Image 1 (spheres, rainbow, N blue to C red):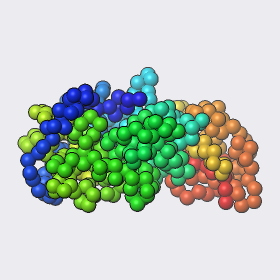
Image 2 (cartoon, one colour):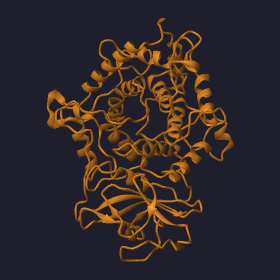
Image 3 (cartoon, rainbow, N blue to C red):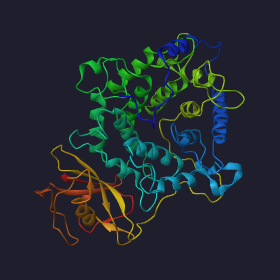
Image 4 (tube, helix red, strand yellow):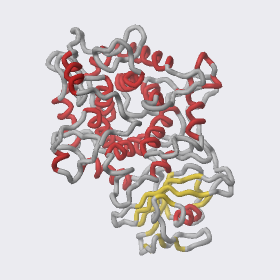
Length: 470
């Protein structure tokens, strides 16, 4: 299966791919210095700023330029500081937040990658993805695509890409205080699926390979290997892990000695190199030393900088291209700047602009969603998006669990709660009762688990995890 349009890049024919590879010889140059990297970042940011619409927008159809937010953040530029002609009322962050808050976004038939892309870029822009507006919670939107019959997958499992980017979004888009907001049990479930889809050659592809010997034996893709590596590391897997080591070896095997490029599925190109380098960056693996310094003294960063127009700052997609590609420029800049697939937002330079913007409380009568996981200690994790209409600025855990019995996606997340009223200790969920030291506990936005009570306050955008255990 091809990757969704949200992440698809230009595809070359087989003949064009061969031709592109034949044109990859680059003039000799030293490995990129800190000064060269700094200049590349400055020029790349200038080019991406030129892509902003007159209305302040970046998001659009097809290969959306909203990925520029992830590149800006990696390069140290705050999205709120990006304005058309200095008009701060149309700054890129505010315009993007308005778009994400719209009831018509993303479309009438959304897919999980729409919400994953938005989560990664909203976070990089300084928009709390779970508190975009009174009605928009991107984390909860992703939770709604959990596959109950295939624990650990988000969206149809055949499109493995959706699960990779779920791991990147849920693990990478941290809280405003820098904590991982989703529970380890959920991260572990995704890691299990990521490992099961690793091909025999050490890499990954966009479609599901788990359980299919033919797919597992098929050649891997450079792009997806970078993304899957980043997904594992973002989920807490160390770079010394054997699966990361194998992925690293796969990428090394695809290096082109005289340029530092990777010989990708569609030939040598900036996007594939950018995704691979971003994967290495996310795992804390230096793409300029050791295994990624070729026998001819070239690195993947050298290749990317060689793809950048000077002056201008844009990156070309193919070495033979004569004009820059917006999408390649985003992927190239993000990688050269040391970014993974998202980065924490920089502190703005615009006077009075905060680092973060977010909805601070529920709006009474406005329907919203909350992200909920239920772990009964048996390994059968339940994940869902809960719809509710609050009656005040906050709600309670009891109200959320009650709503989940009839308004959760996917359904079945919560079937019963005991007691069914009041504010006291929760003694059973889904008929699983407290027993001795094993009781129901709750965590909000990655906080320590404490005794679960119906009266526990829950705020707008809170990511809620309940679990049974000691």
